[in-house]
Structure formats: C-alpha cells, structure tokens
Image (cartoon, rainbow, N blue to C red; front, side):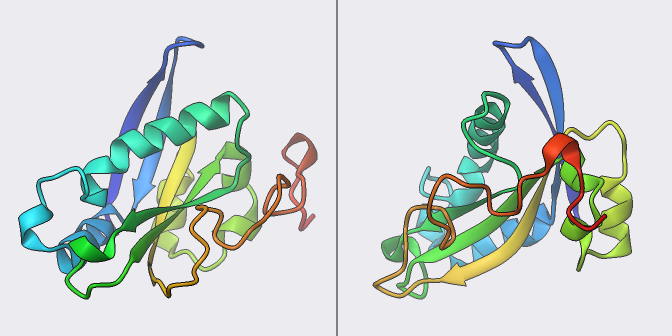
Length: 163
C-alpha cells in the first residue's frame, strides 16, 4: 500500500487541509498499463489530472456542493486506451467523521486503517480500482447513483449508522 499526502490550501477559508491518498501506486500502475505510451505525458492521462481533480472535489466538499462520502471516477477514453475501450478509475473520498465510523473501514487492510487513524488527516482518497465500460454505461460520475441524496444514510452530527 502506498500513501501520499496532499496539503490543500482553501483560499476562501484560508485553511490548509491534509488529504491522505491511498493506493496511488496501484493507480499509477493502472494508468501506465491501460494508457497508450504516446499519451502518457498529455492531459488525457488521469494520473496527471489527479491532483487538480482532488483539489476541486475538496473545494466542493468544503463549500457543501457535494456530500461525503463521495465516489468519483476518472475516465480514460477508448482512443487513448491500449484495449480500445473506456476505462474508469474509481475513487472514494472520506472525511474525519467517515474515518471514525467502522462502516466505511470494512474491507480495508490493517495497514490502511492505521494510516487513516492519524488525527491530522482531514480527508482520505481511496483508489478502488478500474471499471471497464460498455456502450450504455452511465457517464455522470455518480457510479449508478441518481438524485441529490447522499449515498449512505444521513449521519447527523457525524453519528455512525451502526451504533
């Protein structure tokens, strides 16, 4: 497991947020595996767009435009892919209240749980793997979720739904 930390400065609130990114080594390897070599250094490479995408998502979370936990995908177009198919790289963004709830930590290794237990962490981004695409796949970055409701039951005051 690889872990990277991003220090994100949010100008409107003048605060720094620490974001822990897990499995970035696997994400980078997947990008290299599926990307045509001639496009590796261009903006079509999801690995090169990753940091700006995380910065935008964290900004939207702080401004309460999106709810946490949040799933998102980064798309690799078929014309840039070795297999000539659309590839989605799937991620999940969690905040402190999610990290304290065992529901979101199920299935994670002990090493990941230990890394996420650091109290300095404000947000965590977990790379969940790739998803191939068919012609009729939903492309709205909601991972099959429709509507404006959060993907999990509303957690009032950070309450865990398991308690």
